[in-house]
Image 1 (cartoon, rainbow, N blue to C red):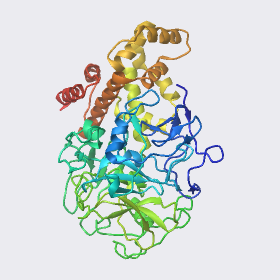
Image 2: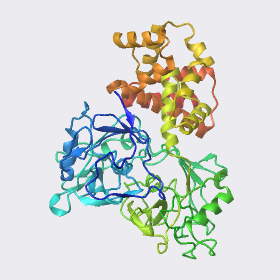
Image 3: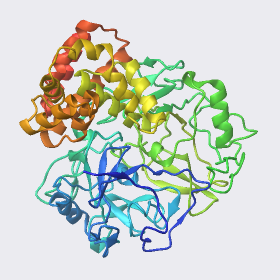
Image 4: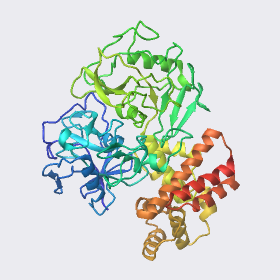
Length: 574
């Protein structure tokens, strides 16, 4: 399939239904050029998160250049069941996105609609359904693409405005935190205590899919979240509570590291509040905001976000000096939407001292509709909203790292599994992930290095071309190549047209159905091992690597094989 990167366009793309305004000069783009890959069939793939989206809202038709017709509003139940039966572009596994997935395509620099209209033309400035029910019975989460905010909406059309919807499907492991929702909406009667199927909704809901369904494990965070507590030097530790708990938290899904609040009255106390202030004209939305609009902080002479960031970096929290205010989507990533109304919507084992009722926290994202506002995320309900930079006194939780690194890491880990049949070592994963990120996703350096390594010579030096290709298939899918595929790749390899590492990448990219599930599961197990090495400070050698190759070879498309492989790794190292 031919694919091209999509860039935001103005004159060449059809205009949205309303007069969209964008402020690319002073607001950092949340979906920058290159985010979406055009599959040339009315779909795009998000290169960050491994999600494929329909370019048109349901009810509209892709003409080959733009979307025609009008989006079709439906009740929540009808929208999910429509998605369950949808077939488009050769795929029949479309679904309604969960709240975090849907919010990931919001373009913070635009409004009316708040989306890249070159990628998603004729998007109405309207509320869109997610598959995520809220804990307030009879409602589900929506994202309003007029401004990019979110809210709850009643399931039934007779009770409220009727949202429209857009469909999504998975094409790779999603480097995006799930919502934490592990219970279902029992339309039209309320919510279930568990993710229980019922006759009123035939389609899968939020709780039936994603990390909360496949990675459900309370040992390192609720449901599908995977956190590690860090001490003041940045080393893993057992989570602590009280006024001075662990200092930071690393999120293994997003590769972000978060500040943990204290309750000791010190510089990072949970009760301090700040006004929003940013003197950088490239990211402040056109106005800097308000320096020291409140005196409710440790250094009461100046209580604003820019000063707080500078103070934390000067102190070297957890050994780092690159802390910053999180974007709206970064802060939303740690919201746990399964929590009850007015309880802190966050895992309190890893984020203690989050105020009772949650409180609102500033993000770095200016409001595209008003240079006097910026976005806040409330942890009493989990919703995002605009707040006055000058008059809103909100809390701050800082972050460091780059969420794009998580996607790059999974790409590199997939190459290790595909090419060597083993998990990547932590040092190599870190180096190549950073390299891939800084080189804009160019895989050339990795391919060259893998193809000339000593490990390549020792593993593959005496194999025929047929054996080399079959070995790649076996390491990825647990089977040998079909005759046509074997002949095709042997010809390209023997003629020198394509290297073995390039072939490994091509086979991995083209995986479908059970092959794709098997490869995804093997990468999951590989990531589990690497995380264990870091948290437990494990050492291992060539004998253990050989055993890991055997363990990965036993993983197939089933979740049971993943559980068994993880147990084998635990038995081997713990």
